[in-house]
Every structure is written in C-alpha cells, then in structure tokens.
Length: 207
Ligand SMILES: [Zn+2]
Image (cartoon, rainbow, N blue to C red; front, side, top):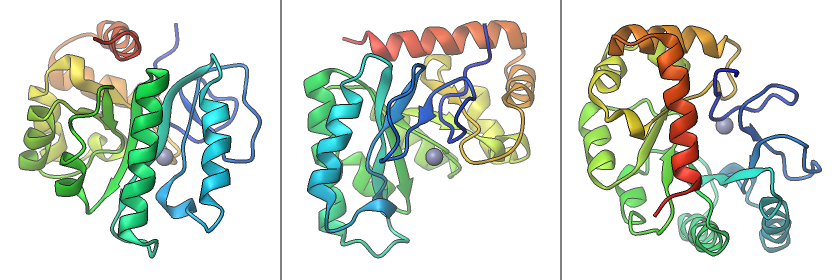
C-alpha cells in the first residue's frame, strides 16, 4: 500500500486528489469543494456542481472549503458557503477538508458539525492546535512540518488518531514526511502508514 497523501493537487498521484471545479470525477480517491479563493458570483451553480461531484463513490471528503482572511470575498458570504458545505457533508455523511487562513476563532464556531472536520495544511501555534483538538478537529500537516520545530512539538503529542499528512501544492515526497513524523513519534514509518490508513477509514465510518 502507498503512503497516504491526505490532500494534494496533482492529478495521477495517489492519495486524496483535490478536484478542480471543472474537472470530471476520476476513477480514484478525491475530494471536491469550493475554495474561498474561487468564490464568484456564480457560486450557487458552482456549488451544485460540487454537490454532484461529491456524491460520487470515489469522493472521500467534501472540500477543501473554508474561511480565508487574506482574500477579498465577503466574509459573510464565505461563512455562508462554508456552512452550506458542512450541511451537505452531513447529508451525504462525508468528512470535510478545511482551508483556514487567519480565521481560526471563526472556524471553531462550526465545531458542532456532525461529520469529522480536518484542518488541512496546519502550520499555526501550539495553543491554536490545542483549541482545535479540544473542539474535536483533526489536523493534517504538510511540508512545513519537515523543518518547523513548533509543529514538530504538536506532532509529538497530538492523539495519533487525529493526525494526517499531506503534500498539498508542494513538490516533495510524502515518504520524507512520514519518515520525519515516524522519527518524532518513535514509531516505524510502516506503522505510521498503517495508522494513517486506519485514520482515513475511521473518518469515513464515524459515529
Ligand atoms: Zn490544497
């Protein structure tokens, strides 16, 4: 079995491929959502497409979707569209992959969603990680965790069942990240690999 890459944007790579809005559904694992940066005046019809794509059996999760404080899209609209994704995910019983930039306190308001919520590309402080973990969120770490000591500290203590690993947009081998995290956790990369697949299975068959 391959090392699970929980979130990436590279077609033909294994793991959970984040589908573009206008791409047809692939014959392998994917996720689909309306990224805040892609919100346009056509968001309603775009969201209908997302609903269609995420209904596919190969769709593992809804998203990435979320809140982004660095883009121009209206904040209320962003929150409304994010909530629409959560409600839809609850309806089809799939987890949600969340994109969050500078809006962590707002994201916490959505913690009552009845589906697993995974913050992807987490690279914030320990205190924010703790708040998110206490609220039941999962955290997925990417390239930054190879070097960042503060992230490595979080990785050392995070409940292993709440952890995922991803390459996102970065060009590096997911295997290197598994090696690093395995070293931090004092487990074998093989053991970690099995654990990540088990985690994926758990978020698909929750509750
Ligand atoms: Zn991404």
